[in-house]
Image (tube, rainbow, N blue to C red; front, side):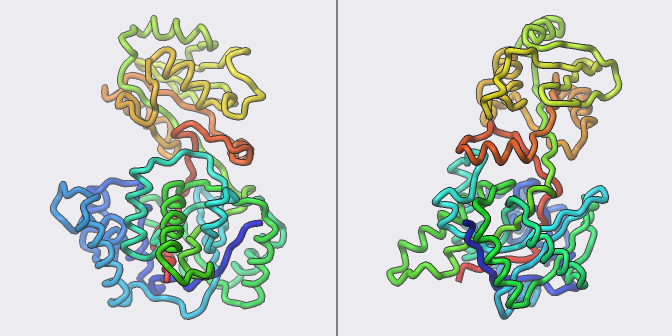
Length: 415
């Protein structure tokens, strides 16, 4: 049973939303944020990437940078660039990419559900990244950015969303840069709010699609605040954190690909020969080749694309982790042939979201920056949910969800 609640969102006025809204903090670096926010004091980057308000090269983890985030958050509210709703509400947030729209409900999820693992994870988190986001939540006393959840779809929830979007959205714009549509409605009918809460109470689990570190940080800060409050009752706002929940049947995971700087002292011929031990290797020429099914991979090397198909016996269909293409490629190509043991720390490897297309793999190799590229068939939502339900963890850099949630459409305060 998923516990959710409505909240008094802090939001930009309708005429300022495109000035305020930004990409998430973790999809761009400091200099990219600095460039995107140039000349725009209302950009949320001043709160989520506050190092841009200091000299170039300033460490984003300095205490003065976190303090600047809180200072800017207060300024945004004082200037009227962010205004809090007067009553608790739910919201519908829809995103349009390539003609397809997915509709999510913006809610507050339960810290207890996270701690009790009713909110399911599929990735490991790193303590340093958790601590960074915890500092950001602490200093602002707010979830500035939402996390991205999936839930098993329900017809009645779909119907409520469908009825809501018949009304005029309060925000409706195409973001510059990515070209994706962002649409936002407010649900303020008391009966509808109560029914949404009741319906989520029948949902057995929520699933983190994107935002594992933000989820962990929000929950851990909530747990901290409990211990610091001698009058804690469990109803305080810090017992909840902001999430956008999408029905699982509307979501698709796209590929998450790899590029490697060298062949581990092998020639092209030696490398391909070693691959042929576990894969059927087929040259495909100079035209981009895209994997067409599970256990089929695309390799780009020295101007030629190859199809790699894992041979029978190299994976176990009954092992939810071992059957993943990311596991097969990590074990049989990156580790066994290229000597890359730790995807999280090895500097010889980089990762490219499928949103950039396979042409980006080709470009990185052709430029001489990388030696070889590997494209994977994407994981399915069913695989993600099955793995999360069994308590397993996917290997690093397995899933890529697109479009990313826009930050700044709504904020959740912890008081």
